[in-house]
Length: 424
Image (cartoon, rainbow, N blue to C red; front, side, top):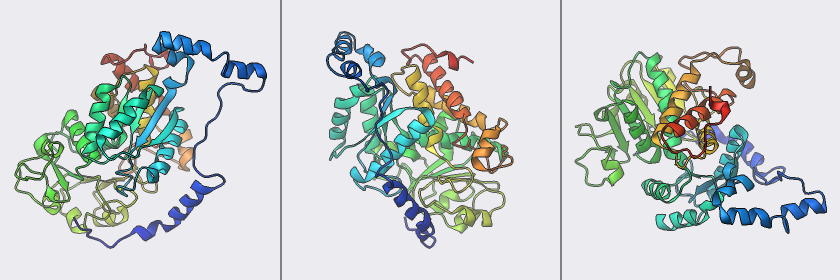
């Protein structure tokens, strides 16, 4: 699929240079390891290492569950990639993905006080990647898969979820889907439309696109109303180039191109690439459309272009410098926080749906002063420019994590009772 507007990457020159300086100075990288126990005296060291450390070793050898009591396992998540689908940059390799993995670690710690080891795996096949993760998984309380290309990401997550007794969550699939779904439910209500009736186009049939389709169907969207579009056009059963994951979202239709799909559509969910949607395509959408252009760093269509053409539009992007940022930080830290707090063995569909509704509902509540102060705003109310919570909203940790933890308990995957803080 070719771009339909002039390249706009030069518009990001200033932030790119600032980001390089941020990552390099005063020391390279964004993470470090800190101590949680004193290590100032000989006695401290005798407890931290030999001879004292032998006793927790014996306890864990007798009962592996004691690892949650005597080590940091229960609050430690591995953020793991093979570097095959990093942001919108493609297959840049495992090492080049490390800044993103470190960034996820920053967000886990900042928003949910979860510790992270970032791990970049050079693996030539999904089987090698799966084997590597399986062998190191006992170190962690959860596994966050990141920036792994479709279709391999689907098989990797499925197999690891079956093999391991800790949560395995591919954020590019489910995290993006959860935040998108929450924002979409709010946007459709504001536009006077219902999910069950909406005609939806998903541009991009990779991890986020396919996972998003399945979640929207689970929430009530009609499968026949969702057209997925990849580089070769609309995904329909007549194509002979579809893998099993694309076949599962194929819809019988006579529409073939992105322009065909968008004609009369209520919703565009873009998880593909920069500048793929033309003004003409946007103008052909139904009245009061909803556009989620989430390609990063350059959206499928820039908001300033889209809003100049349609004054009846509600729009979201993946960027922080526009309203309605679809930011996965609204999801994964709090989803894992809830899962870890009840020692869940999985992050299942019930927990994902609970996160969707928690995010949807939080946006409709009065905005606390702390959020206004954090963003330099005088007011912030549910409406076209506020359909998704702000990442710095302090209520996210309690409300989203609590909803996820309660869903884990209710669905039978929790191995620890619900903490008192979530019993509200």
